[in-house]
Length: 149
Image 1 (cartoon, one colour):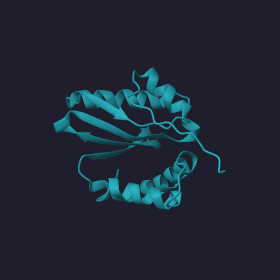
Image 2 (cartoon, rainbow, N blue to C red):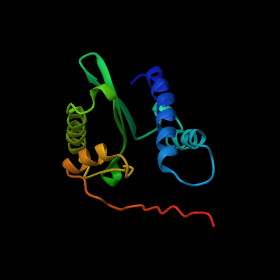
Image 3 (cartoon, helix red, strand yellow):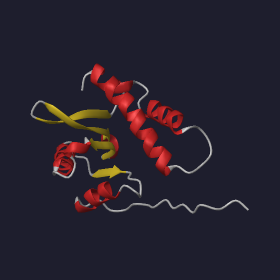
């Protein structure tokens, strides 16, 4: 991904992450767009040049159909998937599974032993994909809304 492509990706990611936060974060504080921007700038302080972070286009031929953002910590033999995003019109066609399998092969070649990720509970499509690929639950956050008295 070029620096220009990264800038477009990053702006789009802020919007998408803000939407996810507004659906899943149930606490007072910053607006979702502000929170998304802060978190993303904290994770990628040097943009596409941030060490250990890899952001790729997912392509079919010459056409970009999505994105992958991965952090690899070779000394820990660990990788964290920050995002796999397949454009809406390409979902349900096996591209997510294919991409995840390619990532797994890539990580195995780098002698990475642990492949981690986070998925929000309401993202049933992603959860199903990850479970089918052999990911196991490592922890569960729970929430109970309390009514005001």
